[in-house]
Image (cartoon, helix red, strand yellow):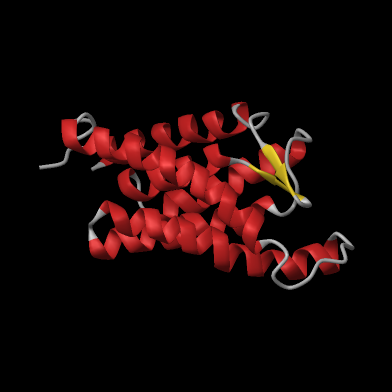
Length: 167
């Protein structure tokens, strides 16, 4: 069990590093920066590490992106809500589509609505309540499409089963 925890921590650290290194790969949609790689990472964490690791990884990645000037405060609600819902969906349903749909719903709807008070109260933006739904959903969709191909290939080939001691 201790070895599995170490593997999960190492994997989480690598995925955080990928998220930060890939931060320049974004596209602007409205007032937000869309990072599809973050949503890919959220789904990978949901499927292979679980919801706790996914949320912590999303928070750390967002914090590092903000600290390096590559992200905005809006990264927190979008990425963390998406990681949580994707992780919980996969944990309880045990099917990859639950992680994909969870990421889309968690980021595109819940994260976007959670971004509103942050944008208006903390960042001083004059955003409407649903202003972030389309940008967050577009960003999440891009990462989810990539994740569908990558996670499906990893699951089909059992590439990570031995690493994570899947029986």
